[in-house]
Amino acid sequence: MSLDNIKSFILDGSYMDLKQEEERLRILKSLIREEQESLDLKRIVWTELGVVGEFKIYKVYDYNHEELNELLYNVGLLPLVTFIKNNVLSEMELGALANIPSQRKRYLRFTPSNLFKKTENIPLFKFKVDEISLFDKVAMWKESNNRFVQLNNIWQSEKLRAVVSLELETSKRFTFEFGTFSLLESPLNYRTDNVLELFNEKTIFKCARINLDSLDEIRAKGFIKKQELNGIRRVVDVQKRYILMTIQKEKAMRDYFYSRIREWQGLS
Image 1: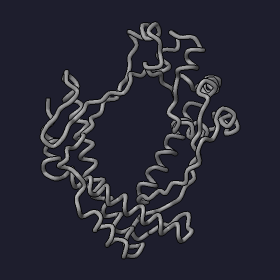
Image 2: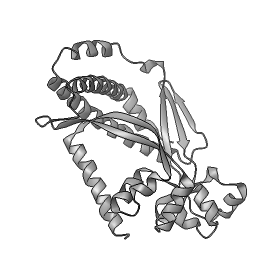
Image 3: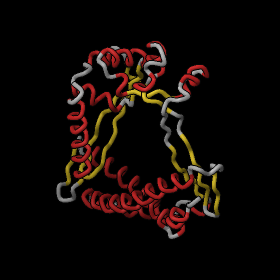
Image 4: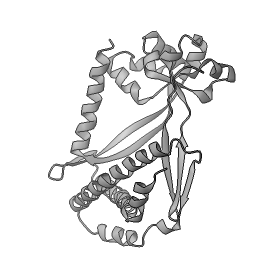
């Protein structure tokens, strides 16, 4: 067992710095959002800072998953883009999967002790930042975001390394003076293409699930029409979200989306 590196991150104050930057970002984003909303501007680009703030409307849908799976099946995508979790299968169905490769995500959760309560300087920080211009708030957000990204990358990397070192441990909880680590596991899941021959269509349609983010890519490529999706889903919520990010990150996200579209072109 090795938690030494992640413990060092906590003990040298880096974890506290990470949580403080996270709180500063939350406060700054809230203040920037309020000010941009008062200007009645959907999108602002601070070119000098390389930051963009934008309001976006998101619809939250409730899907009829069986009909969605049938639609994916009819266009030949169901086996390629879905998975089946073991917690939706019966004992008999699970028995049929005894020799089928499965996947499971493991991750580490840290629950800090009372020693890691929020520090007293955050309310003072909010009081002072209220008095500066919108541009300076965005500049402060970018500086804080850079520090947060750097610290969070280290934190996430150390958690992944710790998970690997703890995989063979029988205990799933590890307590030390500053908090508790818990090794958590997601349900087992199976690629649908690996189990097609074991189950009938009814079982596949009932149990298969797709990452709903992938539907945008599938629709953008033209495999499924928006009208077809609208027939198997209903809007359960409409949310107005405020997105604040660097222009570099926005470009990376856009490039990734279009690279995924190009990958889908290879399937047609």
